[in-house]
Length: 367
Image 1: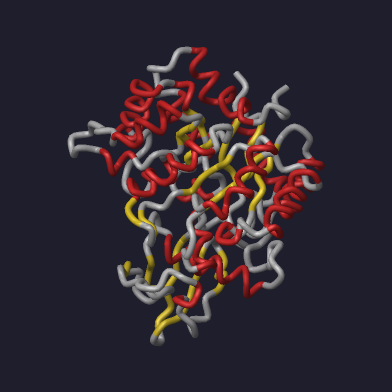
Image 2: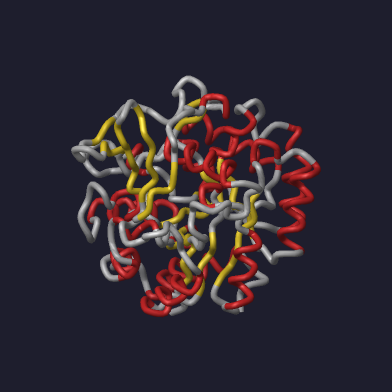
């Protein structure tokens, strides 16, 4: 069985610009990323206690101007991003403590893939890791057949000709085969205009023309409204651009739909999106559930099975979120909780979930 990981990362030490024009611009995105991050807690260094207070951003101002200044926000080593406030040091253990320089070199990821038996990995391209198209292109050249790269734009300004040309360059010049699109990127534009506004039509026409699958990050809530309200906007966009294939990065937030007894009550808009459009669900639970649940994540596996029973294996793609997932489990465990414990999948369905469905998104990469 060919195994393809639909969600992984390579990046230089995060203290570097990592493709941005300056370290300062990169730090802006990392600070915003830690403000919106929910899986790992903020820890007070002095006594190891967690704090709930939002320190990095003004909670009532989700634009760039809401950034808290004077914190010496920084890359602290051993997987941590840290800052100071009122004489105290705080940090988020964002990566595993064994990532000393907060880096994920291509050669290390390839060694991990070889060890676990992963043929290919889709390199997702969030701003927190940098502007990575050139980094991805280098890795694709050095390790033929092992990586598929996703392009990246400034989402809040993707309607501009400059961003459309940037996308085209990443595809034609850097060999990127899809697009990573996170709504968190609208922090830069102050959430003034939605990606579904008519002004974005030329951008989405370009995505559709280039035949790029879009890997979407939909936060649980945005200044535009709740998650389900956002799904209405998402469905409206897919109606207008039916040629766009989509992936729900991190999968549907099934914990929100759990009735409290482990049973998912699928909202109508979710059912409509899955039934009517070409939308794939990442099977990627350890990165979201690993802090609160133990391997082999029986409740998460129950949610995977319920998605399968309602929507089918043909809309499921497995991913790990390496190297981030190692703060909760090993790379092999991020695969085996489904591969070894998901006995509801037939052999042909397993081949689809663990490789074939992902490869079908990138027809020019399928061999």
